[in-house]
Length: 100
Image 1 (cartoon, one colour):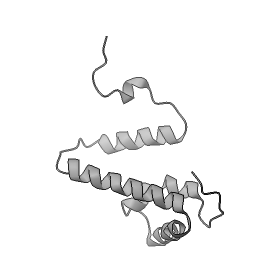
Image 2 (image 1 turned 180 degrees about the vertical axis):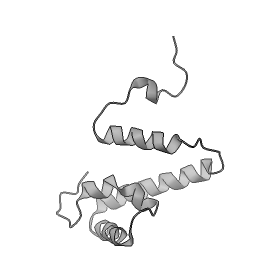
Image 3 (image 1 turned 90 degrees about the vertical axis):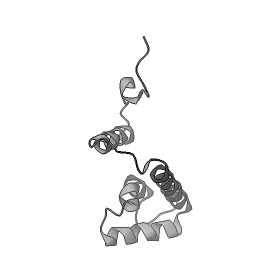
Image 4 (image 1 turned 120 degrees about the vertical axis):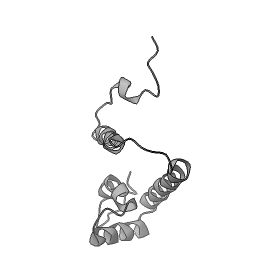
């Protein structure tokens, strides 16, 4: 996604690190770059708002459930695979037991 306008920080960099920004897992100087980018780029601001809303919804609906310790690393691994253009094996994305 890109708005087609030149920015000091490229849209792809913003979107690649959006969750680090949302989770406050980056230095203040990088946060400032993101905030500046959102001021001038409405598509990235819209994506930020959407992801922020999803995080709030998940927290509200699932915030009290115990999560397996390795779940975050598995989810992040899948996200990295998808971002890199690799296909995720079908058995990894199934929502339940495979039917025969």
